[in-house]
Length: 114
Length: 115
Image (cartoon, rainbow over all chains, first blue to last red; front, side, top):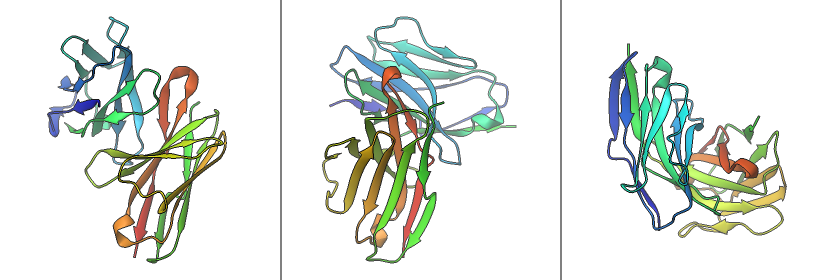
């Protein structure tokens, strides 16, 4: 079974600075997808970024980028120029290719301070 | 695009009653939807996979008879909590896969409080 580990329960960062959230996963699959979801206080889950395992290039979405290290099974999220609206729980998630089920990590609570 | 709605957003009910929660994909068709439960300050726990036109697949430890799932159309899945008890109080979230893109989109959640 796949597992997703987020080792940082809480993190904080100053507005406009950069922060990196860690995620590692365990799988024997070769075809899979990785995701970062954001859950603000409203509790609406929002997809931040996704990465296909077969792609070597790291995904980027505006201020959000990932460092995908397939051999190390690591998938960290970097948030640049942090904004107050980035304050949220961030969940790393894994999806096996051919499956539609998501396996979530326990989450990291990120607080952006003014 | 890719909007998923849930209704109601919150509900309070008496112990022993049943509550139905609806999940709709508004601008895409979803053959598969998922139901999660989230306790305060915890991650999402997958309860079941809802398949259009067939029986739901429940995760280990989830009571099928308590959490009834019906996926009546390509845009609607319902979760009925039967004979609800205070321990069923939680935040319930549904999601739907937009198949072509293999992305899962989430509803805004339903807060259930059982008195």
